[in-house]
Image 1 (cartoon, rainbow, N blue to C red):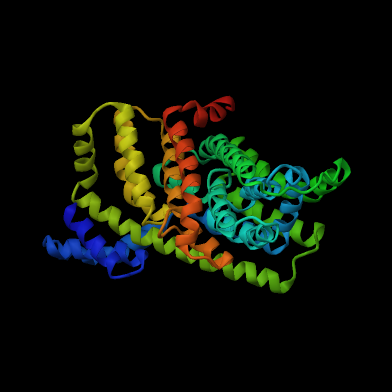
Image 2: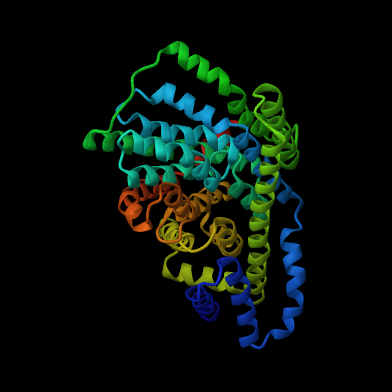
Length: 424
C-alpha cells in the first residue's frame, strides 16, 4: 500500500492530472512488485469499469440538468428565492443558499450548481456591497447541497458500485441536504448581522406567487424522478430518460427558451462532462483491480480494526480519511477506490449501506470546496476573479459548518434513514 501511495504522491507533485495519476500509480505498482504480466488485463478493466447499465443514468441526468440550465431555469430559480428571502437581513446570501436547494433537484451536481448560480449571484452580491470573497465562498459551499438532494450523480454511482437501492439513497440524501442548507442559512444570518449585510424590500405575496408558478414545473422534476423510482414505475435509467424528455418539453413548449444553439451547447457540455466522469471511473477501476489482487481492502480493514473496534471511533477514522482524500480526488474516483474497503468495514461494525452512502458522499463533496484543489472552489474563484488565498479565509468557517453537519449525519443515523423507512 505504501508503494502505491508513494507513486501516487510523486505523480501528483509532478503536476500530472489526477485522472492519469490513478492509472500511472497502478502501473508503477504492478511493475515494481513484479506483477507486470497483469498489465495485459488493464485495457479490459478500463472497459469493464464503465460497462455498467446503471451508469447510463449519469449522462442522462447531466443532459437534463444542462437543458434546464441553458433554458434559463437558473434565473427563474433565483427570482423565486429572491421573492421569498430577499427581504431578510443579508437577503442575497439567503437567496444564494435557497437557490442551491431548488437547483439541486435539477442538476444533481455541485460543479453545475457552482457555475450556474455563481455566474449570477457572485456579481450580484458584489454589486449589493457583499465582500467578494464571502460571496464566492458561500456560493461554493452551498453548491454541496446539489450532490445530496436527488438526482445526485454521486449517490447513483455509489448505488451502482455497491448494489444499494438508488431510490433509498435518494430518499436518504434529502434530509442531510436540507440540514446543510439550514446550517448555511443560519451562518449567513449570523454573518449578515455581524457585518451589517444589506437586504431588499418585501415584494409582496402576489409577486411571490407569480415567481413560484413560473418555476413550479422545474420543482416538480425531482418528485417525478424519485416517485417513479421509489414506487417501481420506472428504473433509475428510465427515470433519467424521462428527466431528459421533461426538461426538453419544459424548455421548448412551456418556457420557449430553448434554441437550436442552446440545445447544441447543452449537448456538447453534457458529452464533455460525461467523458470526464467516465474516464475517472475507468481509471479508478484499475486501482480497484490492483487493490483486489493485493488484498489491500482486507489489510486496511484489519489495520483500522486493530486501532479500535468501537463503531464510533472507526466512523471518526473513516471521516478523517475521506475528508483528506476528498482534498485531492474527485468524489466518483475516490468512491471507486475506497468502497471495497469501506463496504467491508461498514459490514463489520454494523453500519447500514444506505447510511454509509450518505456519509461517503457528504465527506467527499466537502473536498470539492477545500483549499487548494477543490474544484468548486476553483470555479467560484474564476467567476469572481479572485485568488484561492482570498477566498480561503472566508470559506474555512463555512467548511466547519459543513463538517458539523457531517458529524451529525454520521453519529445520528436516523437523519438519513428515517425517510427511506417511511415508504415501502
